[in-house]
Image (tube, one colour):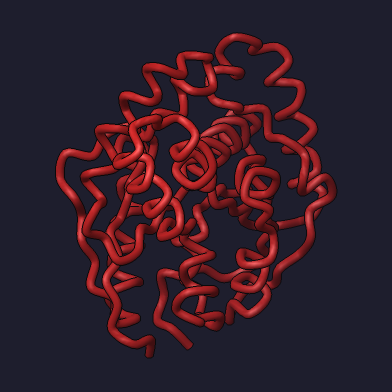
Length: 244
């Protein structure tokens, strides 16, 4: 059992609108591990869609609104690598006011994607799985390239009691979502996704997991349209079962 710590959950837009069950599972998981979970009210988007579309001034305004909401957080846990990347890598550069910039840098240093928080902060690496079968892992672009993280999700999966973890060919290739990219260039997005889904199905996996809601939404939709038996689940949905 981890020592008692406090963590604020940054739920993200897609988590709030499309994957609320993931947020519930994260809260239950962290509480079981002795973490006091807080949820700052008033949080909205982190500003990533604006930033990626070139609206940097508008993204800075969103950052300036978000930073004070998490000012008192001991740790901030994010269920999406893309939003964690936005806070950790882009917030400090977007803010020019020296006082708020210092707060942005402080927030960046205390923000973790979920798997990073479990492994690197809490030191928790072994859990029992909430599902049974074979699982493969997709590296989301922002978590892998933006934050340089590929180890912590795999540490959790390889130690996850009750599932067989298999490596995915092209695990580090984009799923085709890319936020507004999938809307602006749907044909290209679909071609990228089709390759990803073919690789997923070739593993014989029952589940594909990722640490980013955008990737999960993209892959889940594609799998459903293909009539595939493979289910796309957030990492939190795999380790929601009791800790081993």
